[in-house]
Each structure stands twice: as structure tokens, then as C-alpha cells.
Image (cartoon, rainbow, N blue to C red):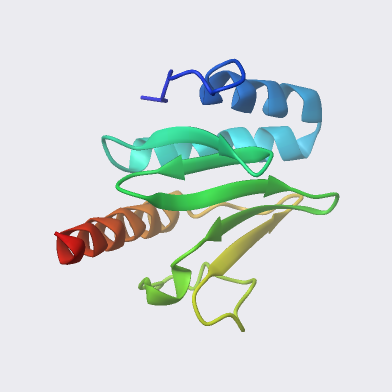
Length: 134
């Protein structure tokens, strides 16, 4: 269920994400909407937020951000280098020591089960980090 908490300056993050999808008005909006649905369906308790002028999803910490560019939609995982990726979804920011990203160009096929497994791995990583701090 998307978070309905209001942002400090206005509408809830889910409304801002709805607006971003609608204003894109092309394949990027449809791609972002499909990615959003897969992320929210990956595990109970995932919340939407709006940071850095774009959508992001959290569960015990930041899971990923969603960015739109002219030629692709990007999901960036701040701790992606620590996540198992047996399906090889990460195809961007591979040189980074901590983060990894997935670029989805126009016409890309989304491997929904693999993406949802990656989201669950990110949530487990965040939960493990939280337990280590306690």
C-alpha cells in the first residue's frame, strides 16, 4: 500500500508519483508505473516517498529511487553492490563500490519476478543493517 503521509510542503508522495507518471505522457510514464507496481507488490510494508525531486521506495531504509531520463527509466539501489543479482538485472553504475542501477530503455522487457526478488533482498539488507545497529 503506498504511503499516504503528506510531504512537509504538500501532497502525499503517492500523489506526486501519480503526477510524475501522468505528466511524462509517454513510454517512460508507462514504464515507471509498471516498475512502481512491481516494487509495491514485492513485499508488504514498502512505502513510497518523494526525495531528490523524484519517487523512491523504502522499507527499513531506502530500497531504490526511480529516475526518468530522455532515453531510459532508471532504478538506483543505494546498496546494490551488496545485493545478490542472479538474474543480472544491474546494468548501470557497475563501477560503483556501493550502489548499482538498472536502466530500462524504451521497449525493455521487465523481469518482474527477478526485480521483486531484488527488492526483497534490498529490504532484507536494510533490516539486517537495522538489527546490527540495535
